[in-house]
Image (cartoon, rainbow, N blue to C red; front, top):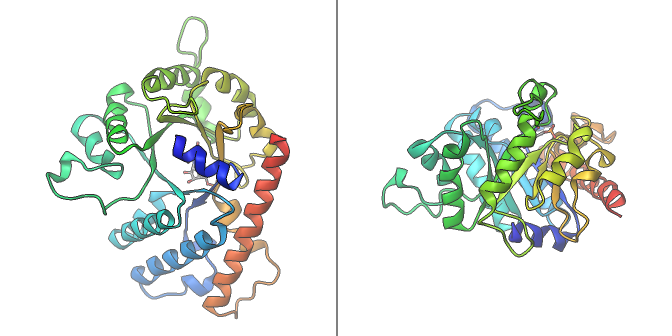
Length: 310
Ligand SMILES: O=C(O)c1cc(=O)[nH]c(=O)n1[C@@H]1O[C@H](COP(=O)(O)O)[C@@H](O)[C@H]1O
């Protein structure tokens, strides 16, 4: 996490931009195409415009792999090219892959972070470009250990789901799982601290971060207190209703933020609210508008978060 905190401090902004393209949030200049290959190229152009626009203003991007996998092999290629491009700009790349399995299967999934026995002795350095990935903890430590091992080997990080932003998260995560009424999320927080205790860096945070949604402010200070050595990824800001006030309790009171706040549609679909958009614009003009609107929205998000931090 030291590298993550270093890049966040450098830009003075705890925001993460989610790169979750889909046809509904791309201007029609990019979606009126004749093949999946062309749509995939549009995703790449869209992402590059946004990355160029926010570099220097934010330090982290979080591409959600499902959006790319939906386009099949060409989509996955665009995921890889997007992560490579973001990485070449010095951004910390958090791959939102939400994997969860055990043993050799988990080790193969973990090849997103490091060379994996799944590809034998072949060179894998140029396959994947993420600095961290998200992991689902439903299988317990057997499902965490292979990812942690890969992260240690490559000096990278994992972010484990703890309290997710979706409304029905409470169906499982708010259930009591002990005689004292400790909820599943609270218990997970304790496990995440335990699993990470041997991998703490210079800022005091372990290599295992926790995902805590922005949409449950009632859980925020309790989870922050249960996760003293854990950096938090906080999605659900913006389009899902999370606000700067809702996430304030998830930051730590030291200079390392302790949390980074993620917004996808709120930034990458901001162009849809720009009155200067016109359907008869050229593709280049539409991409310019996407970039300008994303930068403006990212600046606004930074200012809102900075206000609560101050
Ligand atoms: O792991 C995540 O990033 C995640 C966890 C969670 O609890 N809620 C959540 O929305 N996410 C992801 O965060 C992004 C939210 O997108 P927006 O709602 O458009 O900002 C999507 O990529 C989700 O998959």
